[in-house]
Every structure is written in structure tokens, then in C-alpha cells.
Image (cartoon, rainbow, N blue to C red):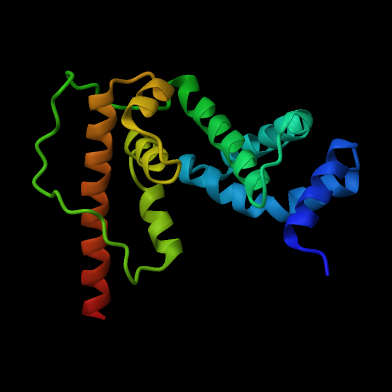
Length: 189
């Protein structure tokens, strides 16, 4: 029986050779996941489709430069391309709205709790994140899902580190309000 790793490596080799059936298998295997990744950053479905199309073109053009590092590395590499394309989309047309704060200042927000998503269905959590304002959502996703530091986020988005920190802080505060509201509604039923 062939292991998943062997199948992934075999698929990669076939794609590099230009095998269209392998490209379709790759698309069928990863498009759902990559759509979800993109949707964390960009809420508009038409924009997501455009970003994914551009991402798959880049993936297939650059796949021969990809260095396979074991199971999951292909998926992670494709995800980074999608995130970069989503960020490029956000940066164009001034879609990213953040409030730059002076270095060292954090916003005055009373709620310092961390969002507790325990027992909240994943689709509900993802919808809460999608509802965040663009700046909050972008920084939150980069910090939480992509595990970027505030320094890295600041560089990616051309903002200050303190602005990144404040956007994350405000995103968490808004998510806490959404979580509290969701739990209150569930208890009321």
C-alpha cells in the first residue's frame, strides 16, 4: 500500500513534468483548503475566486522550484502563495484600513481576555473572523494562523509594530464580544 507521502511526492513529480491530470488532482485535493485560507483574509467570494486562480497559476509556474521537505510541505507552500496573493489583493486599492498609532502606544481596551473558542463550531468561528474589519482580520490571521511576529506583520503590511499589536488587540476584543454574544444566544435557546 502506498503511503500518503509517496503519493504526494509522486503527484509533485508528475506536476513538474507537466502532467495535466496530476495538476487537476492537485487542484481537486487542495482547492477547498486553499479557498478556506483565502477566505480568512478576503470575504468577497468573487475576489477569492480571482485570487485562487492567480495563486494556482503561480503554483504551477513555480512548482519546479519547490523543494519537497516531507508530508504537508506542498500544502504549506501552496498556502503561503495563497496568503501572499490575498495580501497583495488587500494592499492594492487601499483595501487595508488600519489606524497607525504612535510607536509604543496600545489602545485602551478593557477586555484583555483571550478568545476562547471552546465548543463553538468551526464555521461559526470562521464567520466571526470574516466579520472583523479588514485591518483587524488581516493582522489576526497573520499572527494566529501564519504565526508571524508583529515585526514580520509590520513589514508585510507596511505598518508599525505597535499598529500591528493594536490591530490584534482590537481583533481579539471584538472576537470576545462575538463569542460572548454567541454563547448568550445559545443559553437563551
